[in-house]
Length: 277
Image (cartoon, rainbow, N blue to C red):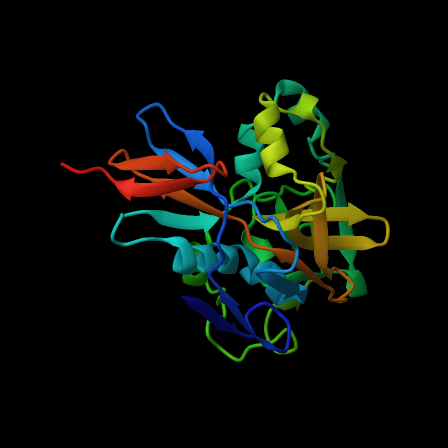
């Protein structure tokens, strides 16, 4: 199966990626027996996706989930795939890991030529579009579908580019710092197997999670990623209007119902199949 999308990630070129063969590992098992398996990349040369600028920020979470859904969901088995996100990593953290990976929460306000923002940021928790210094930030975030209903168009399967859609300038832009850039160690996690599985050496993959960063030079908006043993961020758009592009692998998570059994092969990879009734 091949997934195609066009100009939705902020870059000028079309993009096509094919289904990859993963060594599937168990990510989590809930109390009633539902299992999630994860395909952590083992090569930096397959399923590379590049995001750029405000559209990369706006569309990145949707596209990562959609790519994984289209390529790795299985209607016959009733399994559903999505991209891994920051929450999946945090679920495996110890109290020490959570403490060490807590954002600073610093807040700064920008004006004039430093007050550009990607359109979807207005709908994120803790955003402050047209909020002056000391003003109240947005308390709750909403989904992309909600954003569309509220007047933000997520440009899927269109020719929209950063130059004609994707960002806005305001009078005051107040930003809360939510970025994480931290080298990870096994002590940060409850299970060393989980740590080794999620942070393979030399591999970088996207997390379907956004962040904002504030500094004296302006705000930075982008997507999170795992990068060679680190939790880090990739800045795609800055509040003074600059756009940047970065490329990382895709990491799918597949949710299995209680009627799915897993078979482990000699390599340690799990294969799902329907339980016979």
